[in-house]
Length: 117
Image (cartoon, rainbow, N blue to C red; front, side, top):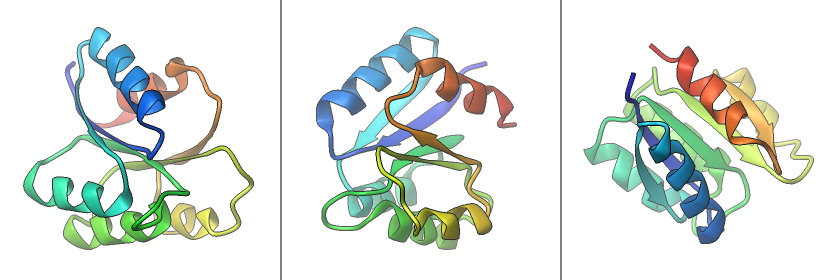
């Protein structure tokens, strides 16, 4: 089943690579380069799932998680990080689907995508 996916990461090459891989699996993917851009895109487009980096300029992934959840309380968001992030626990407590530690395999993303209904 095709899903609408938003990838939010300030590492443009990583985001592009993930988007290409997910597109090859039949998903429609958009990219945001920071948390504010993600909130703006999410406000005008409905996504089945969001993969959100934690550390980004302009607005952190944690802040954008909560901003998106204010727009749509049922938003499905998976956090991503390459660091031990104590602040990410707040998102997990508030209903984030999970946390992916970089580097990860695209199969891990597909597992989350396949779980959303």
